[in-house]
Image (cartoon, rainbow, N blue to C red; front, side, top):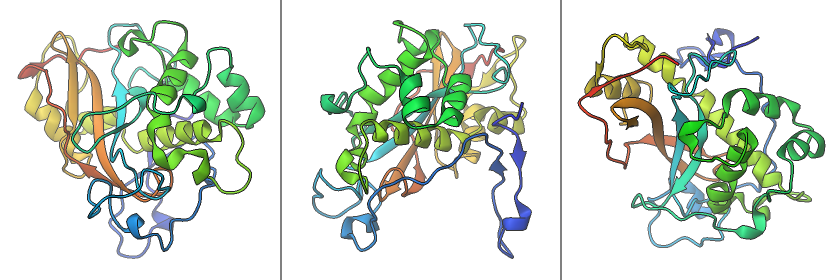
Length: 284
């Protein structure tokens, strides 16, 4: 089975003189997003949280909730030893906070996925995305840390989209081109979450700094933060702990343009870690 965290440098495709980051080998079909073009739209020239003056919340080319976060779990205490995830920080979600770090949630109830709907049916049968469903099933896992206790992984996916995905103003149905199909924005949200997560192999970032899971010693929080910043263009990453044990990671961004097709710029974490100075990074 191909690992999403297998690194491969696509040297043949790199332009001459390019100092390029290695890319991830993925089993996901990276289908194009059917969203309206932002070419010529004034606010699309600015990263979120930086446009002068006010921008309409109806814009499809500027995120009003402008702090984008890709969040990950390290479920050391749940026995998540499924094939391929022993050395993987699994997906939590893709969040959109306000520019001051506060957030809204469940913003557009009319766009939510209901408990009576099957996400497998929506993803696989209605949209033909078996590839996306398989990746989500393997790497977007509902475990103890998620605090979503009413079912399996599909419950976590539904929760994340309903709580956070419905708050992206550039994910509204009006922002899609052609004939919009119900829940197309949810499929796009799930694909973008996976795509962004693929660029953030947290385990590898830590391993490159000599930080690997162990029950024999703790690590300095500052060393963990430095290793993660090195993988996030020097920007500070939020490190979350439970009882002094590493449990989650949050990467922060601003985005220029639509959240699906726009340019992402790493920014420093807006959250203050509650981890102690010495952190346990336990194996799964």
